[in-house]
Length: 116
Image 1 (cartoon, one colour):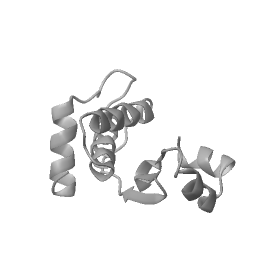
Image 2: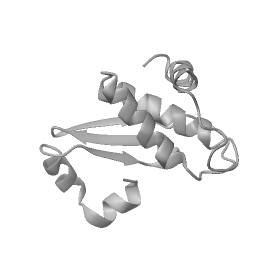
Image 3: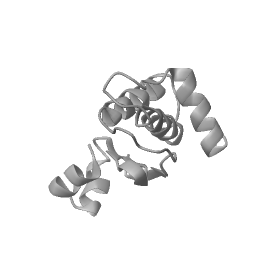
Image 4: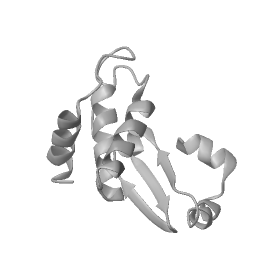
């Protein structure tokens, strides 16, 4: 969910408590992303990009995060890849244009964060 949705539903302390049973991943746009998992907080800053169209960026983030986790990456790495993928998407107009490949997202994350 995004940060506005989360704040509507949960208090900060409540997210930490609930995350002992359920993983909570928050998309925060230009502020990056946050995950509460097993009571732990993980945060990654956003990859800098010039936004042309943010349509679909959340879906791209979700897909990249899920793929990273399924590939066995840790939460911090998955957040980095997801942020990178979303940053690529927002640089192009439209819902289908700008969809990054796994390699593009991975390379962008490595370049921006210095590794994943």
